Length: 162
Image 1 (cartoon, rainbow, N blue to C red):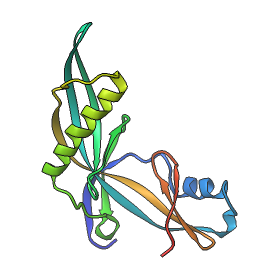
Image 2 (image 1 turned 45 degrees about the vertical axis):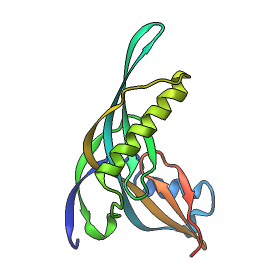
Image 3 (image 1 turned 60 degrees about the vertical axis):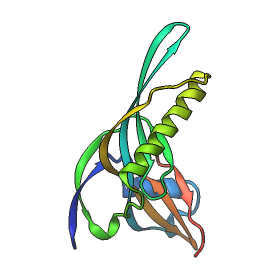
């Protein structure tokens, strides 16, 4: 291992063998090989919303992840974390600041709750920054194609040809 860093990671559900099996279910496994594992950064926030409805005051909480590379938001299902030693060259660098991510989290959460509750309101969103958390992805080459396999969900994302 070269330069190792201790970082907070989402606990993996799919290991290297599982990633190969998933890709093999799509194509020929004999030609599939793990190229490497990368760790993608997210700013992690605990968001809390307060609003008044016809039924009274309502408080809703949720995890919110903001992509630390492009500032896009995604609410998060529950996930477990663990401290891991990761090679520095496997960590993708954050490109947004925590301030930019906080503003994005507030907008994203207000919009998400507005859609799910089907109402326009001031949701009084407050956020608490919980830090950077990394999600692992397996880069798998199969034939002339490289795909990303999400280590939590097993979702497969084809990469654009370079």
